[in-house]
Image 1 (cartoon, rainbow, N blue to C red):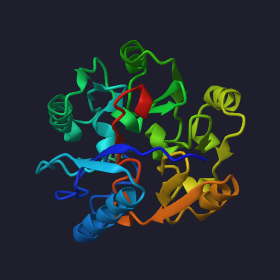
Image 2: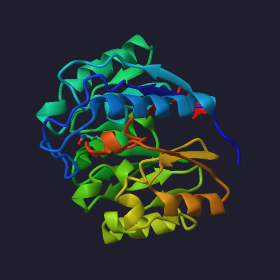
Image 3: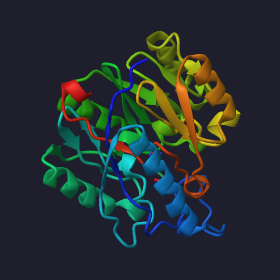
Length: 271
Ligand code: ARG
């Protein structure tokens, strides 16, 4: 399997905290070790660098504790950046910060017309854009994504509030296949996934409950939460190299490695 060198955007968790609850993972009364969160994030960043990826950083903004979850900052494909609109007011001010970053970096930037939480819900799998809905990104946003990017958009209905973003329930492993938790999807979406990806890896609830599917693959190496041991074993059986990272503190906000990572796809060649 060939690894693709990736250009990634991350946001240091300088102001990370769990001050509000907008998903079932978040408990503002539970302790969070902010210094440990930074250390774990730095390890994730170093893991990408060691794999030969390029990591760019957006400056964190005080008062936006979830900004570390850069995947929600946009969707960037073929040099086009679709900015985001968050469902929750607590995250609203992240959107213009990411938008400004895309513009400054030279991406052709588009404004969302509906709630759209970026790569949290929008994943490019081969030549299809898989787009989640049910909790965050509005179904209406899917049509705009198809119009802007020109990839067929496949709607994925999420049904379990713990797996509120598509990237908590499904990982794109390479151009041909994915790993996912079937129970996180409606019956119809499960049928679509079986049709599109007959060779997909099915994760267990135990893997998903440690956010094991919130993983980043370069086609060969898969960076995933260290606690997702069953999923890692299945991926190794398929020939992937797995790299476990511990993001215990960020998981208290409902995020894992993929949430912290936005893929910047320059053009077709570096897709
Ligand atoms: N606390 C954040 C939220 O609920 C976590 C976002 C996780 N990001 C992701 N791509 N799944 O919005």
